[in-house]
Amino acid sequence: MIPVRTLRAAKAAFLAASAAVSAAFAAPAAAADFDLSDLPAYAPAQPVSGTIRSQGFGLGGVYEKWQAEFRKRHPDVRFENSLPTSDLAFPALVTGVADLGPNGGEPAITETLSFFETRGYHASHVVVATGSFDVKSRSNGPVVFVHKDNPLASLTIEQLDGIFGAERNGGMRGFEWTPAAARGADKDIRTWGQLGLAGEWADKPIRTYGHAPSGTTRFFQLLVLGNSEKWNPNYRGYVETGSKMIAPEDRQEQTLGIQHMLRKELAADRYGIAWTIMSQADGVDGIKPVALAPRGTGKAAMPSRESFRDRSYPLARSIYVYFDRAPGKAMEPRLREFLRYVLSRDGQRLVAEGDYLPLTAAMAKEQRARLD
Image (cartoon, rainbow, N blue to C red; front, side, top):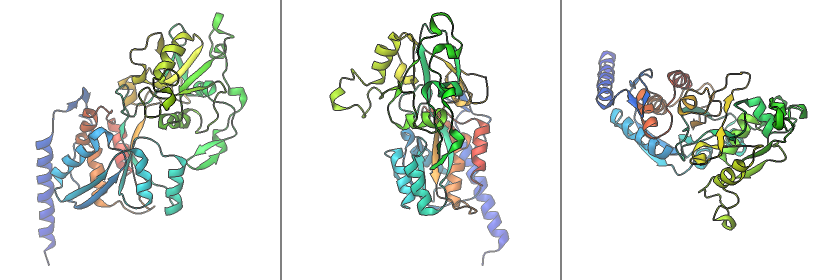
């Protein structure tokens, strides 16, 4: 039997060596213009080994970069990946063929329900990054636009619900239908005068535009519409220009593409309002974004890289890693250690280099606590 003192000395030597390796691989404190010095550098808590199976979203290559850097600290860990799309994450967790399910958005009801029905508890998760403000195909959060002549400067999420939503008797909370999200028709906002605009605007009807069904739409419904499907009856839906969702009969995107909607419809509609993502509005004249305030506050923030990262803008998106952790059970050490690395300064630097937004120190700390 190896003496306890010898084992302790070996572990101490491992941790010291690992810390030295981390320091050797450390880059300057800033990446992609972000100061990450307030995030803790990665320091291994213990040596780990074994295989980590991941299926789902690859974060544009960031996920595999995390793995490569993690193996420099833990060479006895192996990774098995299948990272084509977020749609794979929950099926792989439900069927037990993955340990981690990286996901670029919130799960659909069928995903949360299937996990719960097979396990008897909900899937666990940590947020590992924030979606980009304006870099295309990087889990962008919604931005609200109006015609350039519109004097409106800001909206609250409650007002946004009133504009785009409709009377409802409930909304989804996970897979549960709850009356907590109910609201009456008295909260509908159908004219610009209801938002305080006067003169020619006061009695003009608000015409609404946005995305057709998609992951981004599901996010908008969750954050704005109480996770319901009750839309303003005049809502017109479009798909991202260049998307695989464009139907064969609209290959030229003359009818249902977002950029067509912005250029040909909203830019010509003084009384319109639309939500989409910033990259789709690139180069479009005649429209302007408006600031948004979170529910329960009047402090509005204009959409920007900074307001997305610090979450003062309320519609920034999250990137998740889901995992199976039974209530009261500790995480597998190798999984916990890998996610600790992801949530460290070292891991978040790779997030920034991959054109996503790194977590703030406060949010990263909150997510690390979910691993304990």
